[in-house]
Image (cartoon, rainbow, N blue to C red; front, side):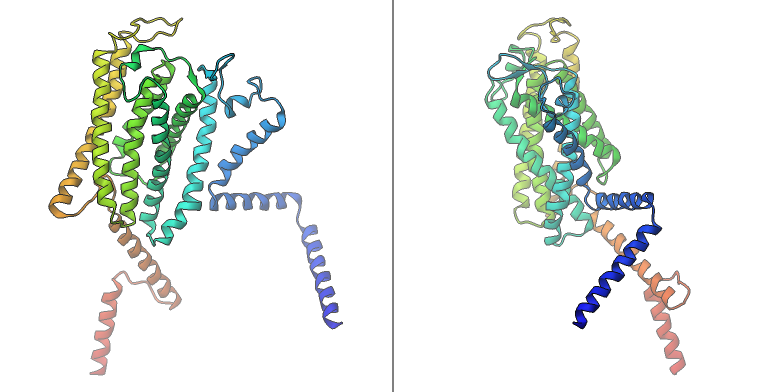
Length: 408
């Protein structure tokens, strides 16, 4: 009976406290607290804001009951320019495709953050990776997951065209490639969105810059120019081939680096596989594409500039196409030189160090030294003593020496 009375009195006091709090605070204070809570939640779970940005237009689109291109949301959520009466469905190109790319950029922002924070980060902590390796592990694992999908996907699309297997003549025989089926267009625009989102990551430096930062920026500029020009001027089959050469080789690179962070015994085997794949795709196949631009670009298919019929395979297009792919090859050659240096060190010193990465052990030591200094300063403040600029070890030796003098 007494416990029941105590419970009732507790409830009354809680209600009284709530009433007092409610009377003392206004609506703006409550809204401000909600806003602060949302910001804290978004900071802790960085994948939440892009998820909300994805869901709001998607839910509005579902409840609109209008799933045609007349709905303004359609251009963001679905592929535009469907050609009526085609089987399988074929799609043209236009300015609305930019809206789809923008929406997919938000998707890749969510996918990147969710994968890294919810899945990859716990895995890294499970293997006991330090802070520097943890971030690099998540970045490379994310790349491994992405390229592990787009590499085989690109080969699957190529398999169902006359372009298989890197048949360069097909670039020009059926030019211009003004229409594509659903899978081809979705793949191409998704790749455009991914590289655009990665460019934003690079510009904002969300990932710690490597020593080859300037070369990486140049690579992204050339890649974005290739994507935009190939799509606008109907060289998408050539673009598909370039996509595949990059994605598959990048998967082997990301996998080798991920295994290296985990100190896996498979690292060397995957690395040497990467070297072979990189040499074949990034150099042999890319040079094969460059050679076709020099020898087949003019002789195979139409050779005319006509803006009305969208025929752009002409005298001015040839040097532009060659120049962009050649610029990509120059960056690949620079990275290939770094790869050869790594191989040389592995053979001569049995040590594999990526020249592009910063010295993680050095960063870790500096971080630990900084933490030690902070701890010593806190201890001095607690003891109400001035902070000494000399190292702790030296101060300790001097104190022991003074103690010995006093005892003697």
